[in-house]
Length: 145
Image 1 (cartoon, rainbow, N blue to C red):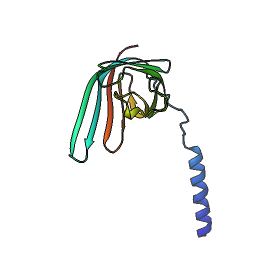
Image 2: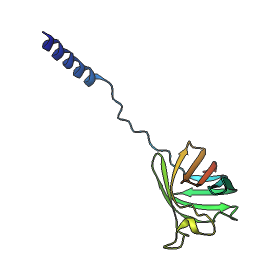
Image 3: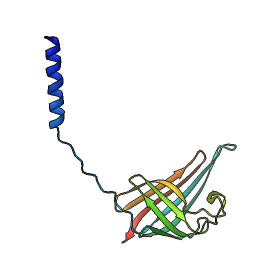
Image 4: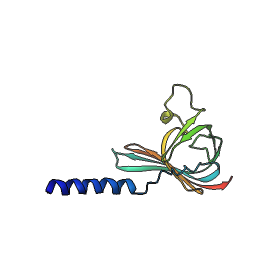
């Protein structure tokens, strides 16, 4: 009798699972395009001194057809251009002004290059990359299409 009840409950659970509504809709990723303006911050922590060194600049970023162009205060950030690709949580920048074979982190000015975590809601566009002692953070707002 216990086996019959167990079998009946297993069968009912399978039927109930099959009748449950499933949502196969895939929400499209909002494509970052247009002109943006805001701040770039480079935050460096020096373990030896236990102090932070911070650079904060105003930048503009123009995105069109998977290409980008950085302008604005380029005193410590390179005015540059290149291509980008993205998914729901990461964006990858390929700055074509970075010299072949060089490490973009060792250049005199920072270049928008590599993988970043990002969030974009149609207006606010924020992205960042970091390691143990260094963080790059962009906080931009859409200005035009």
